[in-house]
Length: 424
Image (cartoon, rainbow, N blue to C red; front, side, top):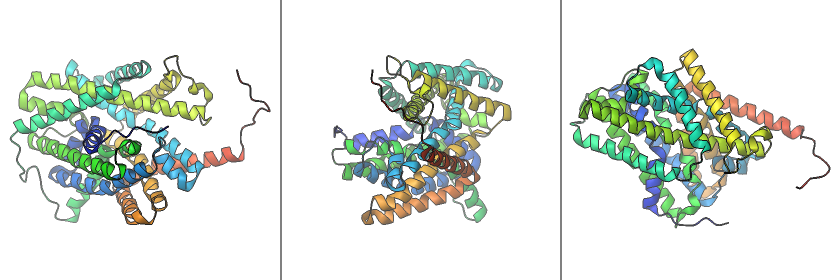
């Protein structure tokens, strides 16, 4: 089956922007300013420079080896099937830390709408999770168009706020690091900012849908990343100028607080409602994506076959339930042990970063001599970012090694097969 080649560079840029803009815009700018202060501007530029060669590697892989398997397929081509399956487990492990962050961000905006205190966040998070699960089970045929629409509204809102604001690039909002201590705080913030660019591997799946992949895909990625960075930088400047950052709750509600500072209390609550809808749809889509992954792994006997079944509407209800339970356990862990969202974000970043590192390293062979320098540069970029993520990389490394060992044991002790295959 051939994919339809319908995308041009403009459509590709739009898709890149909508891929990277979502719940991240609601929390990352405030978190980066809280971490790096007036150096946050440079932290975003450094992160963008690091991610560009990685993006180009994925663009070339996506256009040359189009596959729905994405990163795991590229890694498996070089390192074998065990490594490919281990990457699948690594993707699944993100379920333990990633969705909870976005769910809590959504709950923080719902708290503004309902005008309740921080003590209600766990209850609101749980209610939001249940709603997201029902949303996933109901099916989302039009979810892509809906998500695109709400993200465009979010982008338009941020641009409108920037026009209305009186932000100027001053020493209060932007300072250039001049010594190692200042650069250290700047670079450490990149370990959190990296969350913004999670999704490059999704874009690579669409390489074969461009009219001229070798020309249009790189343009779409580079142009899209440039627009995303500009959008985030504008938000960083506004948040630093109006000082709507600080503790975890303030960072989670930063955009609504910014709207309130510019347009008043009523506008703040209406924006919070819109932000909640955006976060809700965004995470609902990710939950269904994780459920599809669970269902696929169950159908391949990597997980119990109980989770492989589909409803009459084609929805993996059992897999969705499994994902929901894992998200609830994650939320409970955060509540009981007061885990910081910064830690959860960097744990998620660590898992994705290891996948990107393996992809770029294996691209040295996959893409060949022509793109050797680019693959090497992207690999070095991932290693540099790994230093900024720091000890949170251990989670990803542990899961990947454990998954490799599990796949090795399974290969040595394959399940007993029946002599006959029964066909109904």
